[in-house]
Image: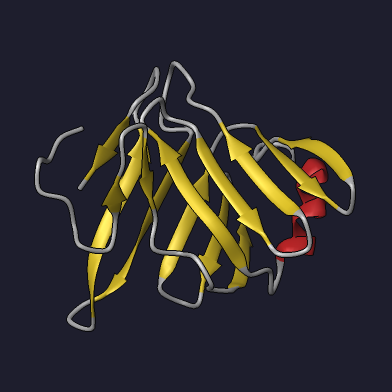
Amino acid sequence: MSKAALDSEVREEATKFVLPLTGREVDQICFDYGITLVVEGTDTIRLESPFTVHLGGLTSVVDPERLETAAVLLALFRAVVLRAEAGKDGALILEFDHERWLRAEAIDDGEAWEIGGGLPPVTPSYRIACAPGGGVVLD
C-alpha cells in the first residue's frame, strides 16, 4: 500500500478495501486486449488476466486474451453492484444483483486488474490496482 491517507471514496478495513461502487449499474462493457466494465460512466474496472465469473448458475473462467470466453460477460450489462472489495492480498471480488459475481486473483507478472474512477470536483478520483505477485497499490 503506497498511501497512508486514503481517498474518502475508498474505505480501508483490516483485510480489504471497500470500493465506492455499491448500488451502481454497469452501463458499458468494452472488449480489447483486456475487458473493461464501466460503472455509470465514471468508474472503470479493467481486467487483464483470466478471472472467474458466476452468471446464470454457471461458473466460468474468462480469459481476456480469448474473446470467445468473454461473451458470457454480456450478462453483466445493466447489472447492479452489491459488493465491491479489493483484498489486501490482491484478490478482487465483485458481487452483482441476481446472484452474479466476479473474482480476479493476483498474478506474478503484471496487474491482474485495475479500478479507477471519480468525477472531480463532484466526487474525488481514485485508482486501485492489483500489484504483481499480490497486494494492492492505491493512488
